[in-house]
Each structure stands twice: as structure tokens, then as C-alpha cells.
Amino acid sequence: MNRKEFDRYIRESYGIDREYTFGGTDTAVYRHPSNRKWFAIVMYIPKRYLGIGGEEHTDVVNLKCDPTIIPDLIAEGFVYPAYHMNKTHWISVPLDGSRDGNTVKWLLDISYKLTDKRKK
Image 1 (cartoon, helix red, strand yellow):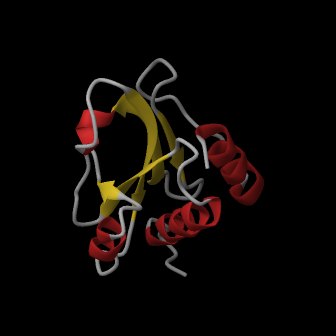
Image 2 (cartoon, one colour):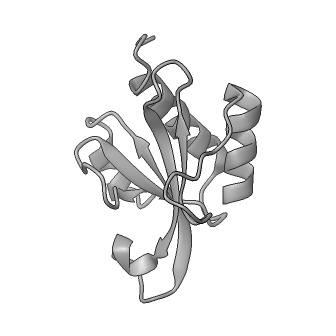
């Protein structure tokens, strides 16, 4: 899944548009309409921030995740410890087309539920 597909999925599934709260278009946040909590943050960062390369940049999304499954996801090489967030509760997922879209959607849905004040 890439950044455009990710954005489209959120718009179609949740009816939520991205916000550029930091100026520019490199970083977008997605918030719950009811409580304004972030459930996804998309960034364009150097791969070295994830420990996977030099100065080449990539799109990633930070998602809140169940801490009990984070170690397994990292061990599988699907996700990375969250860049610039609490690594116990957040993960970074590349949005460069290298990850299966269904798994990214599943992780996004987890993040959405974990950050919803109504806790479903």
C-alpha cells in the first residue's frame, strides 16, 4: 500500500480527511472526529530513522497498536518501532508499496479502535 491508497482508504472507510498540522505536505495526521485524537500520522522521513538505510526518504505511517503483538510484527519485518512516538504503543509501517494492503488496513483499524474514546 502506498500513501495515496492509504489516504483513499481512510476517506472511504471513515470519512476523514488528512490534516497538515505541521505546515507543508510531508506530514499528515488523521484524527477521530469525536475526540480529535490522532490514530494515524503519515510522514516522509529518511530511512535511517527506521534503521534501514541512508538518506533516501520514504513515506511511513505511525499507528497505535496492541503492545502484545508489536514484537511479533517487528520480528516478521513488517513494521518498525515507531519513529518519534512511544515505541511501546506505536509502530511505523512503510507506505512504499512493499507492504500488503490488507495487513496495513488491519493495523489501521486497530489504531482507530484503540484511540476511540468510545472503545468498541
